[in-house]
Image (cartoon, rainbow, N blue to C red; front, side):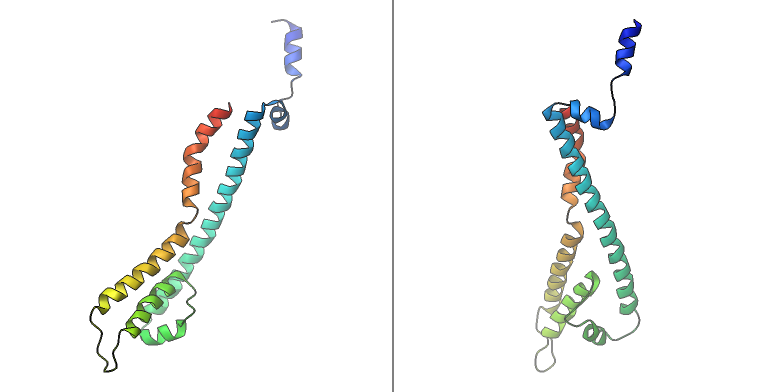
Length: 153
């Protein structure tokens, strides 16, 4: 190789901005798409971290209150119509159904255990949907990004 070729090759700017500016429109669009997906993914990851940390703390607090020996009716009265956490909402759904299932004479309406179970299942599904929100996007980005990146090259 001659010195002139080596000298001209060493003058090429290989910074990220220079490479981006010299890229074709397709490559630029792919790079922008991947960067946007990365930022959105990190936002979801950080949000999920904060949500799960708060959920663990709230679950531990409810667990302590539930097993403290306080009568369940009093615990339900304290939580009331404003449950603050997932476990409290599930508990409130079950206790609310329990209280609605008493007849005037104090006996339980037939099918009460199934209705309590169903109302708690609905509350569990709501909490799971809240906790799992955004995970489909992360899975899609994680599986598609390598192929999109290869398309850009």
